[in-house]
Structure formats: structure tokens, C-alpha cells
Length: 332
Ligand code: UT7
Image 1 (cartoon, protein in one colour):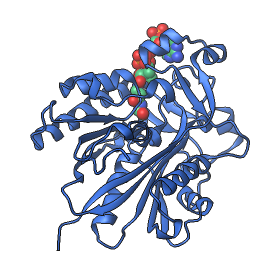
Image 2 (image 1 turned 90 degrees about the vertical axis):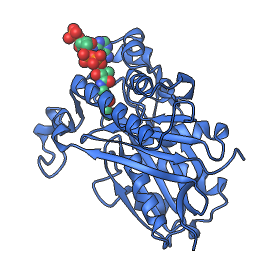
Image 3 (image 1 turned 30 degrees about the vertical axis):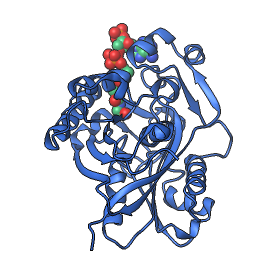
């Protein structure tokens, strides 16, 4: 029997219509387009404004588009994994809600949370189900309504985040394509620099936690920045060295979109021509679990079968890592 690999065989994405510009943010907090562009590299981000809409609604839009594009019927899906830090509710899993909204009835589904590395860790998990031989069609959705946990009175975090969702289909292939290798890390001690203080079992919601604004993102920017630059650059270079991939060989770096300076530092350590780096942070900001699939969605028509890609992320946890993948199809 031929060896099976797990390949991405389709991509879809969804961003809400509402565009929150730096100019609008400058009227909400003491900031400016110039500061945000120089320090972070974000011009605008999308916000899910509609009353009653949640992470699952964006995820469901992406999955519906994915099923259509890949001619997959909901009944064929074996497993749906959703990676998110902004689930619709504490339970049940947002993955179950997405499955229900798109008519996936014969599959099992669950959520994963690995901060901004959620989608990367999700790629690892999804591929293992394919490699088991038992599951043939696994959908991985990365979706976040970051605006639901962003404090729009905190100028140090509110410019960074945006809302969005992306989804990919994993299927088995027998060619030398798909996920080739992964290097994944966590350091739970880093949690003190980036977390949500209340709302979990440690500090359930009370009037006091709401008054103290503890249900929003808490981030100490500088230690996270330093760890992100080191973490993403180290694993990406390690992956290149491990597989003898030169900067010329690599078709694309697919980096988490948290700060343009972090992305540029990573690409520089890899000696990569900036034209080989997928970047859309200026349009969408940091959509947490959706950054990687939104990049693939946007770049899909430029990707060719056999293209060597390195995915690299850093996020709350701390979590970080790199995945080396060979793209499995030509533009359709
Ligand atoms: O995806 C999850 C992982 N997260 C990340 O990777 C984020 C990593 N961190 C960062 O991207 C950056 O640290 C930030 C973008 C969050 C902040 O940029 P920074 O260059 O590290 O700025 P800073 O926090 O050192 O602040 C510098 C100055 C401060 O003023 P003083 O103390 O020097 O007077 C801040 O108060 O900039 C001030 N500042 C702002 N000024 C205008 C902070 N936010 C703003 C703002 N507009 N929005």
C-alpha cells in the first residue's frame, strides 16, 4: 500500500463587510494612523457588527464556500475541527454549531485553542486524522470574532485585532505532497503576558470583573513582541535547515499576521525575498485563528502544485511553531 500524506485540497475564507479604519479608531482612543502603520502595519480591519452574529456565523460562511468550491457534500465530511479563542459560548464547541449551520450531520467535531497558533496546531491535528487512514475528508476552520474581547478603550490592543474566518479541506494523497514536517512548541509560563483575566473557572464573571474590564484581552506588548520574533524566526530557520530548503527553493512564507515588524524580522532571518512573504495584515489586522487560512484564500490562485510553503506562528500560551507543506494543486 502506498504511503498516505495529508494535503490541503481546498481553501475558503470570509470577512465581515464593516471596515474599521485607523481614522475611526483615532476618534475612539488617543492614537493615529501614523503610529499604527509604523508600529504594527495595519491600515484597517473587519468587524462583525451584526447583532446576534458570532464566530460560528463567519466559520459557517467559510465552510459553505469551501464545500461548494471543492464539490463536497456535507454528508461526505468525516470531521470538522474549529480553532478559536472566541467561541460562541463556553460550551458546546463552536465546531458543533458550525457543523449544524452548514448541514454536516455524519461527522464528529470539536474545538481547539492554541492562541494565535491555533490554526497551525489544528493543521497538525487534522493531518493526523487523515494519516490514520480512517478519515478521508477533514475540515479545519480558523475563526475569531476578536472584536468581542477587544477593549476599545485600550489603545495598546484595540488597533491590532480584527474579525474573520477561513477553512481548508484536508484529504489523503499518495504523492509526495501535503504536510511534510512540523515543529511545534508551547511555554505556559508565557501566559502571564497575554491572556483574558476573567470568565473562566479561575475567575468566573462577576459585576466586579466586568467593572474592572477583565473580560478583554490583556497584553504586555513588548515581551510578547520579543518572544514572537525569536520564536517564529528560530523555528522557521530550523525547518529550512532540517530539510535543506534554501531561500530560493521556498515558494512562500505563510506567517501569522500579528505585526508587520515581526513578519519582516522572521523573513529576514530566513534570508527571504520580501516578495515571497504572504502579507495581508494591512487589510485585516490580526484575526488570530483566521490569519493563515485567509492568506491561503487570497493567494490560492498563485499557488502551484509542489510549491514549498513554510507556515509560522506565535501566540498566547505561549504557543509557536512551523509547518513545512508542499502545495497539492494548481490554480483551478
Ligand atoms: O498574535 C498574538 C501575539 N501578539 C503579538 O505578537 C503582539 C506583539 N506586540 C506588538 O506587536 C507590539 O508590542 C505592540 C504593537 C503591541 C506595541 O508596539 P510597541 O512598539 O511595543 O509599543 P510599546 O508598547 O513599547 O509602546 C510605545 C509607546 C508607549 O508610550 P510611552 O510610554 O513611550 O510614552 C505607548 O503608550 O507607544 C504608546 N502607544 C501608543 N501610541 C499611540 C501604545 N499604543 C499606542 C497607540 N497609539 N495605539
